[in-house]
Image (cartoon, rainbow, N blue to C red; front, side):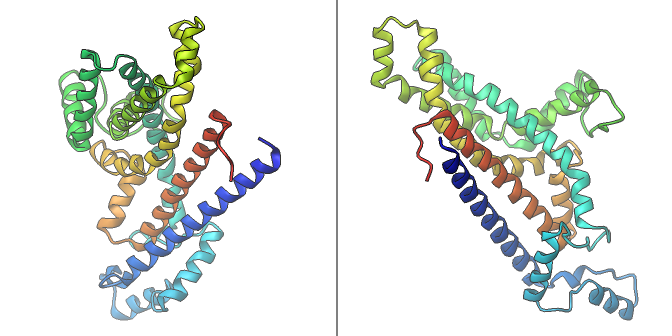
Length: 319
């Protein structure tokens, strides 16, 4: 792929991603600010009426919502997402404290899902119709049906309460504990969160590999005497990965949604728990800031997937 084409491709994707983030922020901002009661309804009630009016004026809640959105966008462009209504702390600071934990958890779950999902789907395609294929398909269906909170509670009861081999909650500090300690705290939440996307990756991989196995070039490779292992690694796996990689970007929002429940079950101090706290406390600036960060993560991941997509299959036309 020529350098100008790559630059044009990246510019188009970045511009489209920026529009998505702006649209998500506008939608969230206007919805939460036009909701019954509005942001002023959650202001402190342990102050006098004059003090409360002063707080509303200081936070700009007495201005029209369109003016507040323009001011919010201007501040967000500088990295200022406003002030939390509940804690009176900068939203950027609150998100920044939780973001590394969620990235660590979601990253571990995503890697685990890919490392398990692709080989399992490929094995199912190669053994299509066998008892092993049926068993793995059944387990994938079960994985899709099992609620995340239920799986989390079951794993806690088995590995934390009964066997005492893994911690049931919390996260250790990056600079204060060993890598082994952090890995121990990460295992159960990562497994539970991976269960939200693993069955989908398995199904995508199985379907894609089955389709590739029926292509003419596979029969040509086999007729030339190429061994089964080389046929799978050189032709089946690479071509089957193209639609799977394109689907991975779409799974990131589901992973972030699953993080809300997973972090609540395991008391994991990440963005999911923070979003839950913000929704329960009607902390509108924090809700809007979290939406923008989640949209940015989804857009960034999609961009990476698009780049990987064109690298895996050079036939893909960059337009």
